[in-house]
Length: 345
Image (cartoon, rainbow, N blue to C red; front, side, top):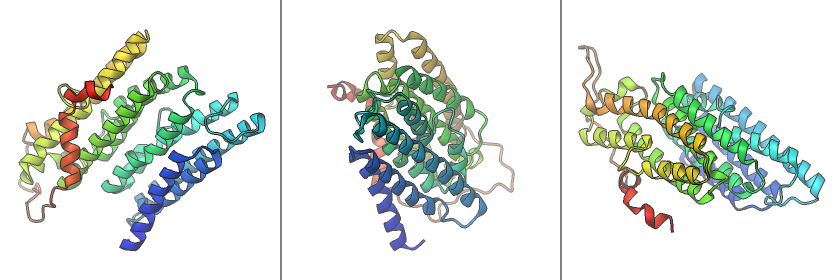
């Protein structure tokens, strides 16, 4: 893909998300989502192979269906109330349609099946865009309409997503699919807390974006597409593999790393609201996802795999320079926990 086309597509991608996040009219929000979807499709299918085309087709069908449901939801609301204002969503059918559409957009259970498949058919960089930037517009719509959505439904979706996301990642060997299930789990935590405290949801989203960006950069630099690839990453850069291990533990939510902060705050708030069963379920589901993070950390750093003579090692011929974005995101992903009191003000 030529640089000019890449710039146009990435600009359209950013513009679509920004239009949705800043709009107060349902049609403008829908237009932003459509621009965003149409910009990412050529990026996914840029590599000329059947798997990329299949991934782009699946992504288009799910996102187009979700956008159509958002449009139907807003039309029903406008028909019954006479207003297109996003914050004034008072029709019951509109609530149901919008919740289903946003769950499909984000990849929440039970509409999560497209996410691992689309990520597996994309390149690592495209997968990074899908699990980070593409989550901003639907999360903005949840934030704007949170007073009108059902608390019970959102908490149920969050609990299901955290359980199925942890369970689904247990037997995966592809790092992109593991990151897809990791994304489902994290979005489940955000959805569960969204109706109770939106500022914790936003904090969780920001930390999730930073940690996922840092880990994807590490996977891109070490060219680790499978768990087997991570076993030989130490030959490329021992420092990088150590950083990957700490990032994986941070994603798993272990103290004293940054990833512990949102889990701690969410569980604390759920207990304050007397939602003890929900807090217990979320805490238990965190153990499932912690297992596959620990498995990746173990193969990356803590063991040498029994390699045969034919095993290809990664030699340091063309090591890409570690970018300032990776340095910044990795540092924040590790050392942010002591600043928790400042973020709660």
